[in-house]
Amino acid sequence: MKPARRDVLQTAAALGAVAALGGCEKLISKATEHFGQTVPDSVDVPSSAEVDSAHHLLSRAAYGPWPGDAEQVRSIGPSEWIEQQLAAESVNDTLCDLRARRFEELEQPAGECYEYFKPVLRQEMARQTLLRAVYSKRQLFEVMTAFWTDHLNINIGKGDCIYLKPTDDREVIRKHALGKFRDLIRASATSAAMLVYLDGDQNRQGNPNENYGRELMELHTLGVRGGYTQADVKEAARALTGWRVRKKWRRGSVYFDEKAHDNFEKTLLGQVIPAGGGEEDVDRVVKVVCGHPSTANHIATKLCRRFVSDDPPTSLVNRVAKVFRKTDGDIKAILRVILNSDEFNSSAGAKFKPPFRFVVSALRAVGADTHAHAPLMEYLVRMGQGVFEYPTPDGYPDRTGPWLGTLLWRWNFAFALVSGKVPSVDAPVEKLTQALGTSGQGAEGTLFRYLIGRTPGEQEQNALTAGELTTPAAKVGLLLASPQFQWH
Image (cartoon, rainbow, N blue to C red; front, side, top):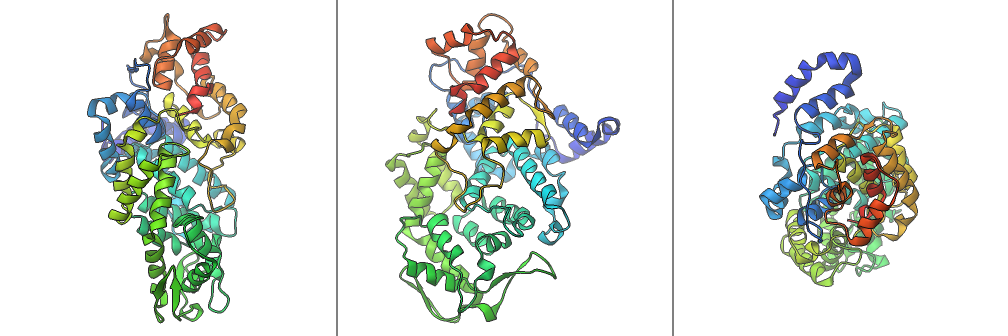
């Protein structure tokens, strides 16, 4: 069912008595359940020894299957699902909005955010991010939002960044997550949050600050071995002088100070930026760095690493880089190549889940109802991936190694989730096992097929039946904590 926003609001009004008894969050949970955002009555499971293609696609291009999602992908085919996800604006996301948009302060202009305490903003930004990842029907969009958030990382612990990041998230990351790469970089270059984080608002004629110019080329575009020099860093810094963040009137907004701008000629990566360009110099810088051949290869490599493997095949990286150059960095076209590739389809189980993906995929797998209160968010902090808390500009790592030390907290979370010991999280494990038909003999195998996407091997089956975990909840917890569920 695709509920119209009007229908949801009418249902919310009809559930007013529930709101009076249990508050807004209980009302939201009842409304979303009414419109089908819950565990369906019946859930099919794959029967192949190889990972099911629908399960694999949802495990990478989404945050893992919600009960019933894999059947939908199988019914329309993976390619059609990809196309629907690329047209994110056409996907009805009313039920997710109902959960996520209650944090009204995050929708305010930057100046209004200064009226809130930092801990409140920090908590609500993290909660909203998690809720969108768990409940959005625009799953690929949310995955790409997380990718670009890391790519253009801003630590909200620095200066006023915490007040400015909600606008950056809305107007830079989410606005351009499936758009043109150049538009994304241009928006980021004059984002108030980025100007504060990388000291761009301190960059002035005669005393250029090189922080942003360096990260623009090293991290955001060309890559560390992209062929730029220290001279290029200095020239980029000169071209980006004069951008300021207001401290009082219209606090948090960005303006260009002509007097602080170096208006003389610059040469960046062999291309001349003529004198007298003023505030248009930023557009010239963005055009030069985004059009450099190294940028296509750098972004292609990062996206293939995110979706395929830690060390992606050169053949795929080259094809993706070619599409990047041909389409001027069209993100949808790039994703279409990656997600339909043979390399992607044959890469099941090659990626280790970072903590955020692990927690979200577990919540989605069991069809959890949550409003992401502090006890749930604390698990992410304990695992080392607090939302918006990475301290350096390179963002959270996208390789396996840094996350292997988080396993104990993953096991703790898995068993706490299925036993109802994560406050404010309702995991309907009994309903899920009923939908899977796992009440009798062979239940372990069915649960394995559902959560892992394939039939268990002989050793895996023996391990599932050898222990003393006899309840459905315990078996689900064991599988969520298993090595197989940590990889996708």
